Length: 331
Image (cartoon, rainbow, N blue to C red; front, side, top):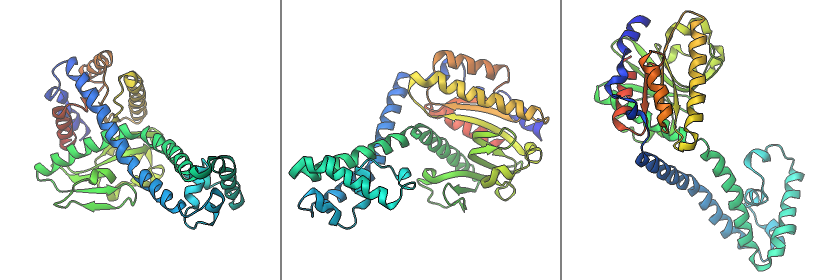
């Protein structure tokens, strides 16, 4: 089966790539990518703005900064304004939290005088801004995963293939419905039946044989046969023959980080090839990226031409995303 799949995938990239230039990210795509990131940042900031408004309203009951301690239901808001993150709170004793709030009131809110509520809200948003900044570091990857996921789901739907999808938090597999809008926001895996057999695609899975996280993993297995949630329990020698394709997905749009993304992806793909070669298997490898510079495109093209890479696509080109999605669904 492995040989048949390899033959099927030979030169599949030529369905959407005619030259090196097709891989290069255009200025227009870069600009659109930055706008998309800005919109996503605003979407993620919405809950924090709502929290700040709620804190402002509740804190308005206090006549002065010291009276904030008497207002019920704002302790978390006070702790956040004191500069404590959600993660840090898990390591603090109740007395530590009280000390942090007292320090906030004495050192910053009382000196603000009648504007203590305004000062409180500003400091709350400052800490929440750090939280938002942390979540935004991975937003490019999240947006990339959503875009590729939607393309794969669309490919399966128009082909008449029913699928199941795995919820990222509950890990439960859910059957396809007529209304699947926005399921890509909370999707971790997709499973379907092809003409060849069962297929399961999992995002961000630690593959035991490689001993590191892989962005996209396509298996010749049904979900019930793949212990995807306890990957360390999978016996490498047993699962290796069922790995069809492994890929790297890089959603960062900043041209300044393009080469670094490619270096990281290339190192990961090399580890994959070396690890599987040791047990006599050679799964297909592919790369999908948002920021692809000219020199980087040349390296990717050369690897496609010499067979090192099985497929590649620029995430900003709809036809390329659609083509590589069809390729994955046909394997």
